[in-house]
Image (tube, rainbow, N blue to C red; front, top):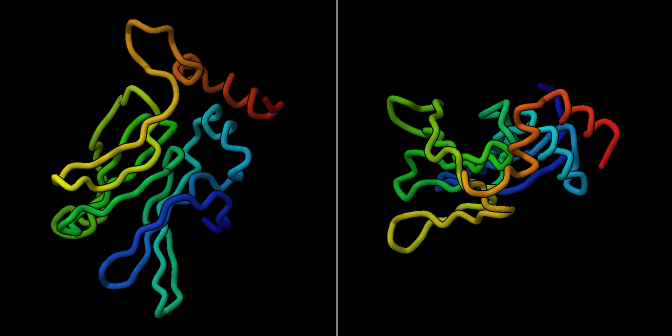
Length: 159
């Protein structure tokens, strides 16, 4: 896509030496992260880098504020937090589904931030922001999620 990295976020290293990292948004910088959440556009990427060849490329395009990443213990897949989509994706690194993604967890009650392995084989996910539930009032993200034209207008004029 030819975009420079504007909002590098999480990084992890594969046993073979390659690195995977998230670029949360190619349009906005870290200090402008509220605009990313308001706009909720798929401007994020999962990228990889080989330090021996010094070659890098984009593994996944069109991610919604990709944030934390975590490789599974067997290195078969990676989990990717998509903050502005309130979900976690599963990206296959090996096997028949290599290069494919599927939703691992969807409609989370808060914004998924980072993710790490737990000692018992599960995952710890940092969640931030107000709780999203049927009993609560809609969050700003929920309200604006159904109004993409409003998100873009607010992002243009600033907070």
